[in-house]
Image (cartoon, rainbow, N blue to C red):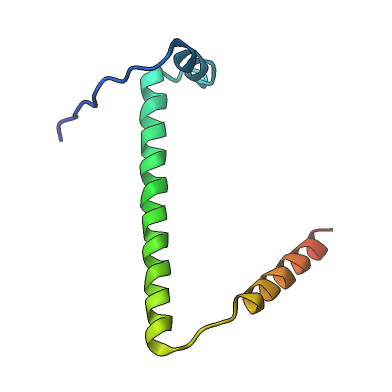
Length: 89
């Protein structure tokens, strides 16, 4: 598979310097930019999937008429958090 280029990116000297200062040993600026791009693509894909699942769940609840009160969900989550904190102490 052939590789493709991305458009060149103009940034302020301060942003470039900040990026260069966080490079790992032996890492190039190009590798850092590619890794950042991949991470943001994955983040956006995950967000879209999350939103799609949430909307589908909403639609199912509307058609079935089965809802769980938010206060009950929060209460259950708080109980789980309290239990996890007790176990980690």
